Image 1 (cartoon, rainbow over the protein chains, first blue to last red):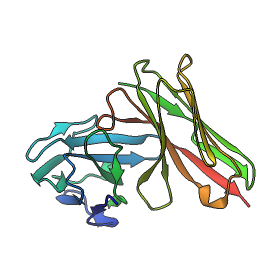
Image 2 (cartoon, rainbow over the protein chains, first blue to last red):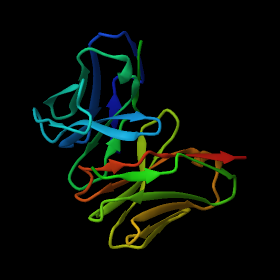
Image 3 (spheres, rainbow over the protein chains, first blue to last red):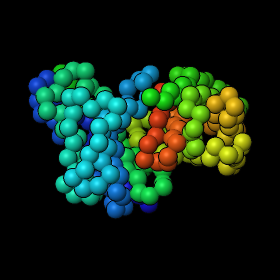
Image 4 (cartoon, rainbow over the protein chains, first blue to last red):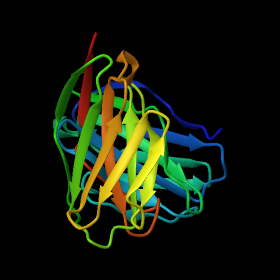
Length: 111
Length: 111
């Protein structure tokens, strides 16, 4: 079974802090994704990566950056967290022609 | 970008059928997916249908596609309390690397 894990289930941070969200997949998938999920808005793509050290902006990249130094790991970085970044963050991965496999999500609260 | 719309809420009684609807705007959509998100968890693929199909059945799940009206539905027969979750419709023209998600429908099953 494909496994996608995220480093934290819940995080509480203060405005202005730098926040790292980590995602690891164990299926040697090329493609990895970061979404945020907000009530009534569904999932919105922040960034994705189709290979090590490669990244592409999604629909809402502002305020975020990403890092993919190893194939299995995709990190989402909030350089200076703001209250409007309080959300559920979901990581996903996919290989060739498959569905996306999702992690359990990280619920981030920015105070 | 593409627009994928769903009702936000649906309540049904245990044992009844549930029908969750989705409309999309991209006429070149090739793949249409249904994902389920249980409380506190990530998204899990339930089923998918190719645009050249009208219907797909998998145990209690029936997917109907009306390509002319760009309307997708998910019917759950004999709905159980364990079916309570958020259901996301997603569409893609190119496959799993480029999904557009709907807002999600929160299904509540009343015992």
